[in-house]
Image 1: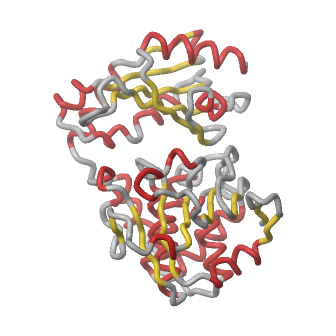
Image 2 (image 1 turned 135 degrees about the vertical axis):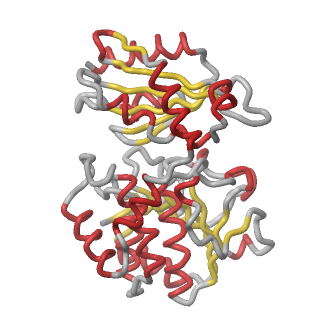
Length: 334
């Protein structure tokens, strides 16, 4: 594995490890609205650095809480929501972030900071001082696992669980095309380290709140198909959330039902953002079922990003405008 720094030099894996070994104080962050890979990588990296004798702090903005219910079992000891006074002395490690705009930049004031960018998104903008971007990795957690091995840190059960959550969620329970041999080797090692596979599955995918089921029913009842089914889309409004008593993150998983419909090339979920100052803003999630379509390219056109098969963006466009945009973009690629 190799990376490229902003000075144009190519950094080897050993040089990235030297970066970590040579620093003593770290501040770790991840992208907004963190998913399983973002949170798993954050928690695991923090615990790995502590095990290596480093001074590590995790940072997440207060607006990110409460976390999605399925990830609330994570230990967040060492997490702060206010930047530490010694932030200028710390190496900032940003995990699973495709671009700097997806980070809490206003709160952390990155200008002049020494940033280690650890990510696996193929469209990463290489914003770090050192960029450890490995597109062939199944998830960012896989990269953290590799760094852990390089640092010769033995995984505790807590570290192994965090890494496994990142792995299983970003590979779609080992079903997405990013699932390679290395992902299964990693899974085997984490199970040996104490991961209870069935317990993790139940925590993430079962025991769902009723509001999540009710929101799913709303989403499925409002599905619309376009262009012979190539685009399958649905929407969730602020009223849907209010009437079902659902939290904003309860929409997770709705789009997977759309993606699985026969004939679908691209699935889209358009949901209203909730909370003060979010009025009129919509979050669009995209999934590709057709290998010819790169939904990250569609998302980038409106300021977002992601993977070829899974991407997203935020917008103020109306439902009608979004449908027209998505139909044109899908048609252009097909």
